[in-house]
Length: 197
Image 1: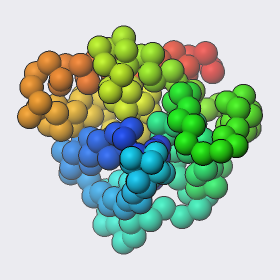
Image 2: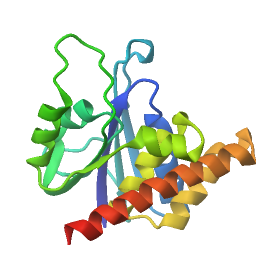
Image 3: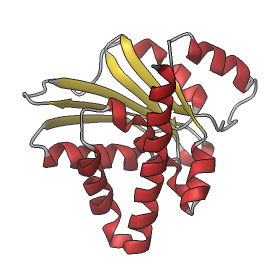
């Protein structure tokens, strides 16, 4: 088994927290994981991406090849579009719909959405709205992890264990809020899958 995930967004959106939870969950399953990151300048809304490779065998490269990613998990829609060339033909895009307009000429969301829909059936998530329902806009990254969970080769309870471990130093309230956000994203994605079939 091998599973390749590109996590993308802009600085300050919690991309590395998503990657850390997936790392912790994979380690709990006794899997090998390799992570390679490219950091932008968060104060300027720079691009941030993380290549995550999960396998039951040794991994020899941290970078995902073009056309081979099983999933692009993005917290910003234009960033999902930026990495489309990495997506495998049968791969899946899961992206937030809230834009971060950080450059001149940022295209209208409708154009981004049209391009994303050409990939098949992307999961487009109102992560900001679901995060507010969970109690904090800052949990939108965990909403997105939940939305991607049905397409990641890791069980829900193992991912929730990773969330607990990542946030436990911040207290039970923060842990509970992030798990609630994760579950809201998961429920949204499961509903999307049912509508697809």
